[in-house]
Length: 106
Image 1 (cartoon, helix red, strand yellow):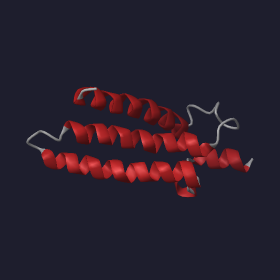
Image 2 (cartoon, one colour; image 1 turned 90 degrees about the vertical axis):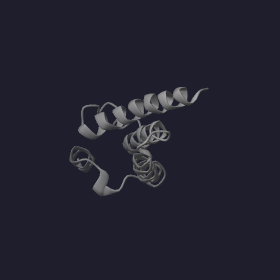
Image 3 (cartoon, rainbow, N blue to C red; image 1 turned 180 degrees about the vertical axis):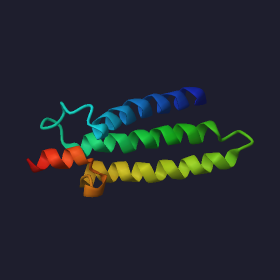
């Protein structure tokens, strides 16, 4: 696979995972509630952002603005760690959307 193919794959996976997680965070997609554990669904958002950031970092590597690549690589590391933490250890209360906390207390 070429470098462009890898970058396109990172973008596509980031859009899918980040989009599903964003829909869950916004409360637009609630049908997963009760069937899938919230760690996975809310963690997808952060992992999707990490994949998008990795794709952006890779796309700026061989350009005159290489420093931008380092910013996106740092963002990918932070959001990736947050996503893995959410999936493995659970979503911290401060990362849970209000609609989810209210629905869980019922």
